[in-house]
Image (cartoon, one colour):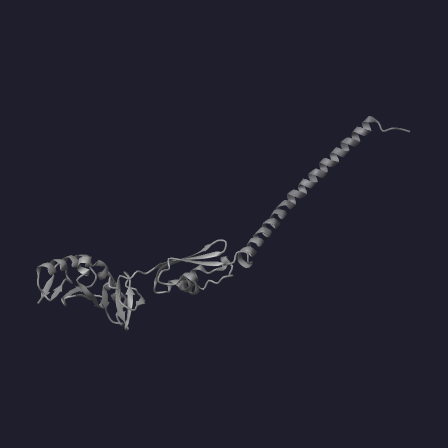
Length: 252
């Protein structure tokens, strides 16, 4: 019986090593070809899971609508007005629509609606602050520094000046009236019974003792207030015209 010689055994071992190296190279080539496919499949699976979780599943639904800054308006009214419903996927909440709906409330000066992950919508509002009380259509309403009329009062607050006007008075005229009220120093405001707003450039102050100050428009209101203060302390009259503050006039 003939045995395999050392040369043949060595050649067989070398051939086996060569075969294994070839097999490893082939496997590496196949992996290089397929790894991009595997990675793409994994990425698509992760993206698909994320999209489903964020947009369609109940994992990130709205569970709370949080309202901050509400004082005269109830938080429940703000929530209802926003149209944001519990159970809606948080990512699908229309923030712009909610802001527009809440911002349409006359009492709201500014509103910001945002998402608070994972399950809340936050509605931050800034309410209008009344600087005067105006009677319109038999109702006492607040008026802010921009001349916007909002809210209502059963009785006029004693710390706010009154504005007399008509229902037909334009929004521009009310803005002018608000600027006049804002410009009045406290010393003058204490003397005023009400501010009469007829039009943009027909604004007057009626004092508590019946005297009248013709103001004109809101232009140069700070200067007009100083000129009127000087006239009231030095000149007796029934009518003080400071509509042109560089040339004030008085009438008995």
